Length: 157
Image (cartoon, rainbow, N blue to C red; front, side, top):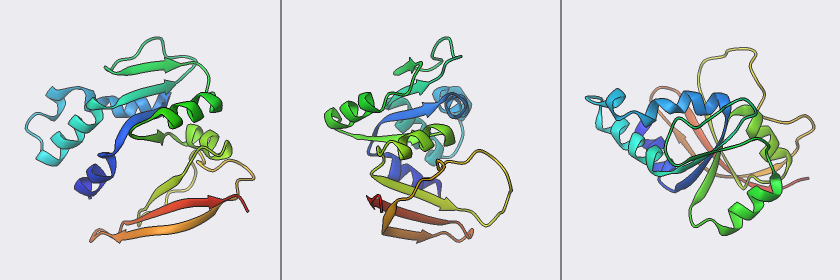
């Protein structure tokens, strides 16, 4: 499954993160942390390190990774401009930030991994009142029971 995710990530040029998701992903910045790990992990680390990162945080003082800038406020117009100029894909990581991006009409495609474990609670990645028409582009089932669903945002109904 990790190799499948790596293949999805190859087109990513910029990661947009909330602070908490960024702090989780910082693991991939340190090459020593993955030394001796399987090649699929090394591959992901290289993908992550070679991409730009924009972190939206009002509390983070400085970036702890290369190719990273901190923004204090999520500005949908700035993201639209970034998308228009981008030569590679952008991705959004973090439930709160994803909710903003979905609510502001910035998301073109969704990748959802459904895992055969139910855990109640957590932060919603869907903003209140969000209603989008989706077009299924692909699905993939893994032996573990995980299902990947790839959708295009068709329109707001």
